[in-house]
Image 1: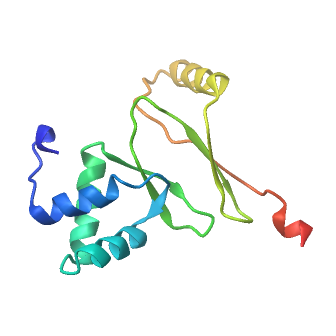
Image 2: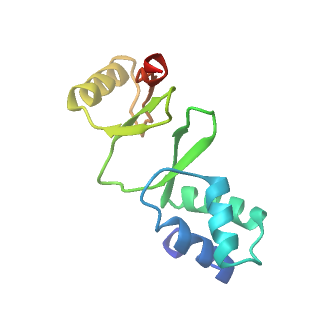
Amino acid sequence: MKSKGLRITPQRDQVTEIALQQEDHFEIQFLINETQRIYPKISPATVYRTVSTLCEAGLLSETLQSNTGVTLYEVHHSAEHHDHIVCMDCGKIVEFHDEQMEEAQQAVTRKLSFEQVRHKHVIYARCGLLKRK
């Protein structure tokens, strides 16, 4: 954050510590709960502002919406681009990378005279779990 000129406070540092330890996609409410469990004096507003700052700094990514419509975040690994499939039945999230899909996106972008800066690809699908019950 310092390299991006963003102010570091003890509270922001504590929220950042917890956020960057997450290995899976997470809701901001999870981060609020986890932060307040460890640091009870940190307010939800501080967590929201810190998440926004971490996204701005490129440390977190707002990746997708869960099957319930809640925004999820993940620790950003710039060298590990991937896309997502979200199951509308069970909520499972599958990360994948498909080089042909990446090439097709680049081709369409060039064809329409754009230069791709970044993208977020999410496929919402059904695994069939509900049909089996």
